Figure 1 (cartoon, rainbow, N blue to C red):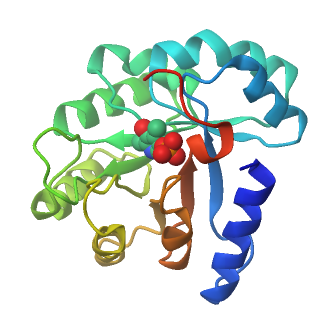
Figure 2 (figure 1 turned 90 degrees about the vertical axis):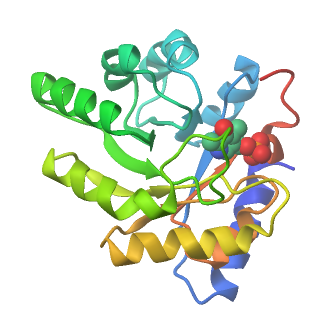
Length: 217
Ligand SMILES: *Cc1c(COP(=O)(O)O)cnc(C)c1O
């Protein structure tokens, strides 16, 4: 698929659900993709990208930002506390806020820096032991803790279990966001972005459907 056809499928799904055009933004997930594919998207005018690792992003995006104005970069993968400073330098949004120690570190680093990227709390909607994210049972309390730290929380992110109906997880995420007054929902990947668009996603994270299969990672 090309990014144009992914975008038109998103437009169709939004229209079918009675949602406004452009109400879900497409995050092109460029992790481990060859640089020329990323540049092709930038040349075509796309500006919103997602990466999984601080080090990989720090290695390629500063140079790309110099060449292309208006890039917006989101961190989607787990963030170690010793990489917080580097992450603040590289990313406009962090979608993987998932534990109190990270919240505290982010608050301190943001205070020092004077600015903080937009933050999404990652929810482990399937309570999967191997997956990052806050358990749905702990979500309200964790969100309240983040707010006490004055962190700029905008929404929630989730990666549903591979073997379950994603719609159930999208609905759960939307419910947690709504009862906590959070407006942004990052949900939906290559296999289920149309479902997510219909169910209220405001950010869709699509990698392989745009770029083709990843070589590794
Ligand atoms: C890799 C990744 C994606 C994109 O996955 P695809 O299935 O290739 O679209 C989305 N979100 C996160 C958190 C990822 O790690």
